[in-house]
Image (cartoon, rainbow over all chains, first blue to last red):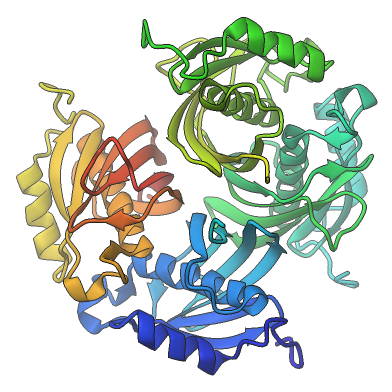
Length: 142
Length: 142
Length: 142
Length: 142
């Protein structure tokens, strides 16, 4: 999707993943794709953290949505560790059955002080999202 | 946009506006467009209700977002007055300068008990939204 | 409630209402009470704007919640017209039947850049709220 | 707080923790206190999951808020594994520095189909919350 669109910051998937590896030592969440004002995050939880019935927990779905928006911010402002989640609201629509959960965040607004985005999360079928979310990141105070 | 897509309920813009006229007697919010799981609402506030500087109030922007989602629900379940807003979260991104505010709601999920959608609101330029929102409507209890 | 607590900004109900009268010319929403980091807003809609069955609209309930949080900000930072709603999420719990809707906002956080608060709205019975909300105001950019 | 108030469902902290141990096998989140329509959840993350600077991650703060609301639901409807998070919105107010994060959820509404609550999370000092949240749980479909 969005073939040929590129992050205006020039950031690449590899740069983001290298940054994550360095900073979040135990982290299994990675960046899978980036484009102009959007990014996809991917998370495969350990089997022991799954809920009964093989369901990925709501907390992990929230986490991957939050990360997708973090990476989407990087597509505009570059890798800026101190851009922080100000608020995020999430709606859970069906159980997150599957091994891997992905989330795609699209920025709706990138201002000087804050960035706003909308996120969709899915497991096996992107057409049947498990959750949608919307939230705000704030840039570091100067 | 979405040329050729049609509401699965078969509802039309005219049917929605006729319903609104009958039920919400003093209402200036109308339906402008509908498609398959999406709708556009439009609202032109009276001059006296504008904020200083000719800004449409946050409450009115919220109202048109809420309405767009209401109409989007109709595209799936037909005109159902008793589908009710359960929750809505909104982010205001810039002042709503302009005479008319429009909102486009897209359904992310249409379940038996609830419908979830994402909304974008704008005044003059759809590419510069004044707000985004996300929310849930619930169907009547049986 | 909170007898004897006073706004740290020293702002009074009369000062807030005088400000509202001057700035929001057609506004029926007023400030009813203030204390240390909290405020109560009150709104009596015109009969013609009521929904069928004498219900106050969701948009008006949202509006009074938003205002209560605005006034609560004033209790900390003084009357600052340009403190703006960044985001607000609301849950509607029962129809807002009644002539007047009130909302009480309590600040959870008052930072340099943003203020966060939680709001409860009711009509006849404060023990049976019609909605709860939570949101963020941002201070003017310097 | 709320000394002498008891869950109307009669559920106890021990019953909730026994249920958690059985169902969520790897779970470190426990119930610390319950009362009439409120509950406190507690979570101590492993050191390896902390963020740089010893910060508890936003995802873990979300998780403990979500859990507090789950336990608060139990105080009204009893232990009902299939009451599910429909939506939750969270505001992060300061870094969650500390070893343990706690969240207190209070129910604002307990209806037949849904329960709504407001949550405060803190680490060392309850008077300086790290986050506030608000959300909705839905009861199982019959």
